[in-house]
Every structure is written in C-alpha cells, then in structure tokens.
Image (cartoon, rainbow, N blue to C red; front, top):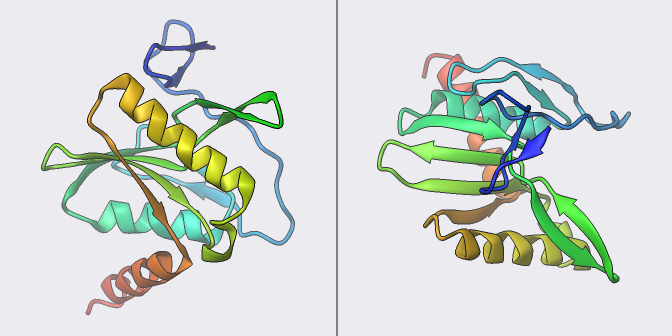
Length: 154
C-alpha cells in the first residue's frame, strides 16, 4: 500500500483505494453496501453510514463517492495519528466534499475537533478547492426519511 501525494490510499500498482480493516462494534449496525456510484464495496460500521451511502446512491446530483479513502495526518498529545474521513463525495456541479458522519454530542470532543481542524488544513494545503462537512445525526435522520420515502415509492 502506498499513499499518493493527495493522501488517497491505494494498493501498489492499482488505482483502487485500499480500505482499512477495523474491528466490529457489537452495538453498531455493520455490513457491506454495494453501490453503483462507489468503486469498492462499503464495509459500513454504523447504520448512519449505511443511510448516507443509500442517500448518496439515490441523489441524482452525486456522480460518485468513496468511503474512507483519504488519509489525513494529525497530532494528539504529541503523537501522530491518521484520520480517515467517512466519505469523499463528487457532485455533477464539480463540487467535491469530504464528509464526516458524527453524532452532534461528539462534535465538541478534543479528538473530533483536532480531526476536523486537520482535514480542513489538509484540504487548504493540497489546494484542491474541496469542502469539508460534518453530517450530524439530525442530517442523517433527514436522509433516512428521504431514502425510506423513495423506497416506499412516494
């Protein structure tokens, strides 16, 4: 595995991002989502991530998206870490957004604030013109209602 200059994880000799393996959490909804807009299967670790993937699939403005494909370095307590934002979304308009799905009550924690600052700095440093957004539980619940309505044929 190599890290390209833009911080996207890729296998050596491949253009496909490498998904990092993470442990399952017993109280979260986990599984695999196959998307026509994402090159690799999404190994989601929460129902919210699954809902976001389903919403992105159903959104005609979304051209493509990737799941945990970016590597963003950050420092916490003097030690280097790597942050993997949840989604990289590309829209028909040309807009690209790095998205983190996070509970509202977790936004003020030191770790989350450091990660968010790191990704914002990384985007500026790379000069890509991308945006960063945190989609909270309230946003994801709205997406869930839209996805369920679409499935019900409304």
